[in-house]
Amino acid sequence: MDLEGPEVLDSRWYVEEVSSLRGCAIEWISPGKAIISRGSELLHGDSLDGPFSTIGTIPLSRWQHPLSRNRFARRFLRLMYFNVSPLKNNRYFATFDKTIGIFDNSQFIPISTNNRFRVLRQGTAQLSNSLFLGEYFNNPQRQSVRVFRIDVDSTTPRLQTAYVFPQRHIRHIHRIQLDPYTSDLWCMTGDLPKECFILKTSDQFDTIDVVGGGDETWRCISPVFLKDHIYYATDSEYHQNSIYRIDRQTGSRELICHIDGPVYYSTRLEEHIFFAVTAELCPSQYSGHASLWHLSTNDQSSPKNILRVPKDSLSVKWFLPGTLYFPTTIDEQTNVYWGGFGLSGSDYRVFCLKQKS
Image 1 (spheres, rainbow, N blue to C red):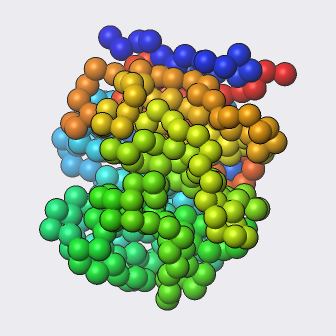
Image 2: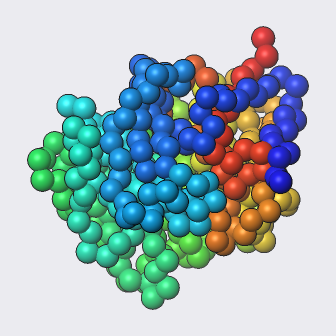
């Protein structure tokens, strides 16, 4: 069942599976550090070739633990890691389902939350000893929404409110992201058109500036920062999804191209930028595939859809959209690795995208 797998659409690229990581999710890659998860267990090694040693395991109930190893049950129950960040002194910040905490010498120290919420994958940003995250929850009553700061050097870490969006202003926060060129923090919100904003702060949320907002062309999750420009792709439910470029100097926005569905994740390899379209099967989506769009900052030709993977046969509502995601990276990559869930032939498998020489 569901064994089609990824289809490469551009002859300049090819895909190889990292077969040793079947059943795992890839969480983090940086020079000399690779982090993967296997159910509730978090592991690290020097590279994706392994070997891996255990960082720690999220405490689960007797019935949850075996279910976290089943790829269908973990999708249905959301028993998965959403965020992982290495800290100093061999400590690791992690969010698992709606649990937030820090691994310290293999012991998981949970951080208490007043109302349980989830932080979207790659939804956090670290600046010095502070880690920032935003509330992501259904929020039908449009309650106030908070940005939190955690002092990751503290022996008793806790959530400290850094900023509050007032009631009926936004639904939730998609992501907090660090601009590596300016050290500004960017904040992306949604979901209804009037709730969609791209914001930034240069003083850790004492004040915020509006980059743009007010309609679905500003509904975004994962911008890509370059020295002179910021690229982003939209996560629109109803409006035509597109890739845009913002000029840092003038603040002007340029439409680059239209794409075939909403984008959750992006990554960069030198001059190459990749946007991953999710098989959400929403009104704005053209097909039942996840896809990978590529553009080169050295090439003036239009971005291209270079890869697609069919959604599997399970419900988007109960078993998640068909998602092509990238590991978190903080330094220049040498390869583009990606993982999938909810995708035919790619569920909980890890692949490497390579350019032909």
